[in-house]
Amino acid sequence: MVHQLTKAIYQVLINDPTVTGMLTTFHGVPAVFTFAPYPEGAQRPLIITEGSIRDVARETKTTIGQSIMRDIRCYTDETGDQALVEELGEAVKELFHRHESTLAKYMTDYTVVRCWADGPRVSNVHSPDEYVYGRIVGLTVWLTRDQSTMTWPLD
Image 1 (cartoon, one colour):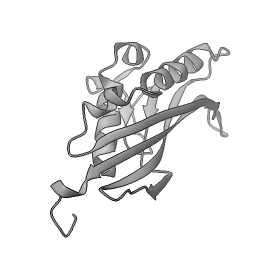
Image 2: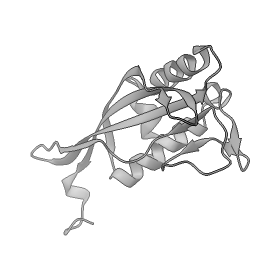
Image 3: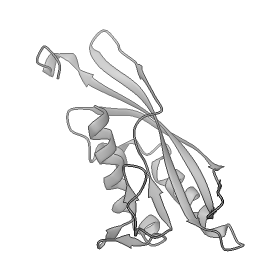
């Protein structure tokens, strides 16, 4: 379930012209990464979404489901103006919040019951070598699967 969600989030992000218009590219594709640290040579602005923060069973009599929390982290270079990172965070939030059908286009075997987005909240990075502006959009996605279509044992 989670691997499909990762792929779906990635596809939604790279196929939205508003979001990709604010990102750099890496090897010819929008700078959206499903792992961290991001590759050396990748430039900001970029997005990282990796793994689940929380994954809770959410089942009914006829469905198996999970409520999955995931962060989408947006980063830009420190320029003295945080407008770009704020705009990117808001665009990501708008793309997902209560837009279950957008995410469902890229999911197979699962129903996207709910998709909520919160934030963006501040996540600036301060280190001796750099200062990076960051915003985090939190997703909570409730996925279900009809038990009658499943084979046992589950993969």
